[in-house]
Amino acid sequence: MRIRRILAAVVATAALAGLGLTGAATATAATAQGAPTYVTPSECRQGGGTPAINEPGNYCKGGTHDGEQVD
Image 1 (cartoon, rainbow, N blue to C red):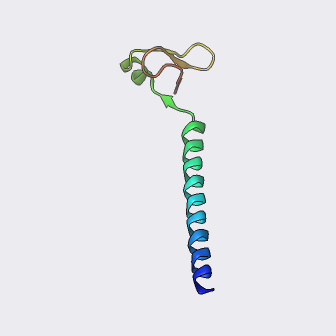
Image 2: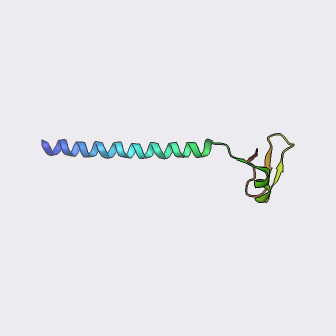
Image 3: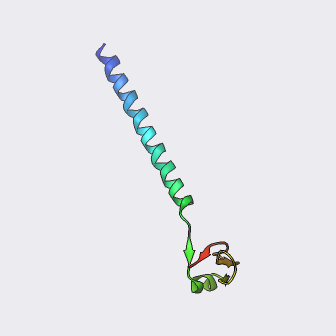
């Protein structure tokens, strides 16, 4: 009987630890994708792009920062 309780406790602990790791990974992924990125006009140019400041959205066109908003 005692072995069953210990085994149940070990299984429950492992299950809760696994859920905690899964939740942390999901939260990290949501934060990384949800945050908008901004670059300066000089960063846009240094990355090989052209800052389209006068166009709607103020985006960097081309280069490594293509599609990121210019601030």
